[in-house]
Amino acid sequence: MNRVKVLNTLIDNVSMSELLESLQRGVVFTPNVDHLVKLQRDREFAEAYHAADFKTCDSKILFYATQFLGVPVKEKISGSDLFPAFYWHHRRNPDIKVFLLGAREGVAAEAQRQINAKVGREIVIGVHSPSFGFEQNEAECQDIIDLVNQSKATVLVVGAGAPKQEKFIHKYKHKFKHVQIFMALGATLDFEAGNVKRAPKWISELGLEWLYRLLSEPRRLWKRYLVEGPSFFWLALLQKFNLYTDPFEGEIETEVRSESESQYQQMVLK
Image 1 (cartoon, rainbow, N blue to C red):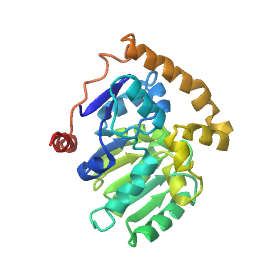
Image 2 (cartoon, helix red, strand yellow):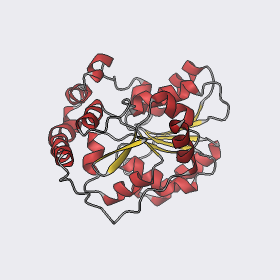
Image 3 (cartoon, rainbow, N blue to C red):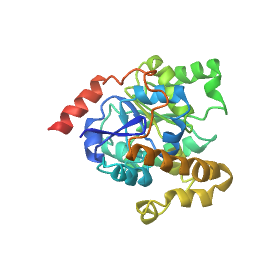
């Protein structure tokens, strides 16, 4: 099985190594429990998700949920694991030139400095920290597009939080002249800059990274984990007993595989 369905989202059943080998172009989203809950009520977000080429299991809780539903994925591939694996995989590939968009002023620049030092070349060639609510300002969005186009970046990493980062990519991806790969990666820029500490690996493997983050940022994350989290388990239970109904069923076009996704599926089948 190449993809598994969890609620109204198809998630790639792929390993990290398979993904890195197949990711030549396309849009990458990393669904987690928060995303899946938002996808039940935000049609624009759901449309962006349906159009994405790659969707990887971002959380251990979601990983366990796929097992509970009888459609287990191979492994958890969170955005914060995928991005360092990606830039290390392409450390000697001159065609990979990354632009970082997101985070607070100075954070993306620090992430750029640290990443380039790790790989030993200028793989990150540009950064920009947009204003709060930039996605609602057409003029600012056009300025961002111009900035990325001028940089000639081939990879755009957007760390602006869901669902704004996914909606931004979906709305404007056709306007970027050189970008081949788009990644919506949330707090990854903060992690790369050392601005926010990730949970220790053993906590993440136990599926408790959400608790670590909640205790680190309770005011910002309490609703995500204490209100929206439990509703996901109820929806998963409904799916388990074939009682779940897609709120947008019949309203959003069936996913169409892009060229990059077709290549990826062929590789997995081999």
